[in-house]
Length: 136
Image (cartoon, rainbow, N blue to C red; front, side, top):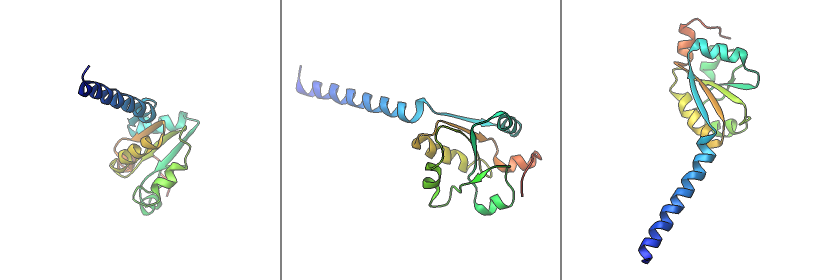
C-alpha cells in the first residue's frame, strides 16, 4: 500500500476518533429545550433539583425577575467563571430579556459540560407580557 494512502487512512481515522470523543464530551449527553411561559412555569413547579439563571444585566434583574432566579449577567467579564461554579449536573432553567443571550450562554455552558438547559421561549419580555409572576 502506498505511503500517501496509508497517511490518508491514518488522518481520516484520527479525525474520526477526535470528533467521536468531542461529540461524547460535549453533546451526546446534553439536552437543550425551549419552553413557553406556561410550560416553563409548570416545569419549574414540578422540578426539584434545578437552578434558575437570569443572564440579563443586574439593572434588568433589579427591575423584575422570576422568583428564585440567580443573576449571572452574560455581558460581564466574570460570566464564564461564575457559570463554571454552578452544579453541572443540575437542570438549568435560563432566561434573558428576549431570548437572544440565553441561547448564547447555553452554547458556552454546553462546552463547559452542563447536561440539561431549559430556555424560556421569548425571554422575560414574553414572561411579563403574559402576566406571569415576577419579583421586584
